[in-house]
Image (cartoon, rainbow, N blue to C red; front, side, top):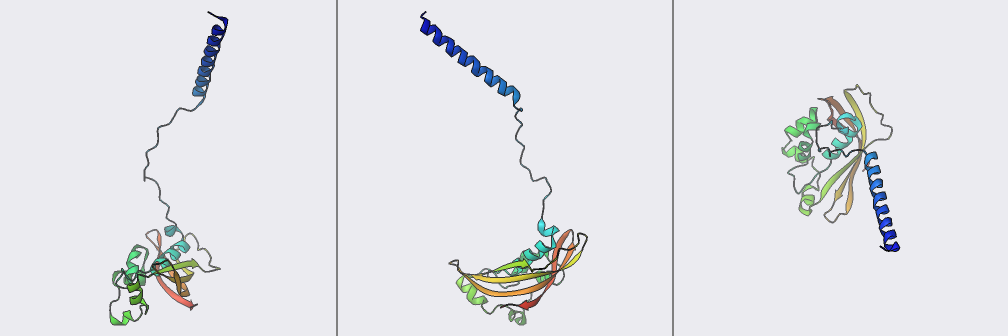
Length: 189
């Protein structure tokens, strides 16, 4: 064999040997691969609306102030969407919505035109400035919220509808905060 061929074989052998040693060294140092854990829903679920009275009041009132007139028979249909988060007077309204002529006078006067045009009303609710957290062991709370409703048109344009401040009476039942009643304390527009 020629010297150059022998040298080439020696270099190739050396490269293969060094590659094998490097592979063995990294294999021994790395952790053994763990089998993938199966995805499961068997863990504690965190529901901020159940634990935080301020979050609960904001969410419930946002739902109550949001309406789809083209799909709903009345504004009271919204109460049923959050019935499990209601108590007291608000729960009674959800379970037995008023249907008489007098109750129709409380509906927004634009209800029929919103229904015809496919508009929807979206409620935006945030805790009012200065609203303090309640004690962890509290079972009742009064939460002051700023509420705004906007009419959202099918083309995506928004028109302000109403803005007000309300005090929401909250009670903790069955481990979650529920809205029992609310009173509008100030109308901005």
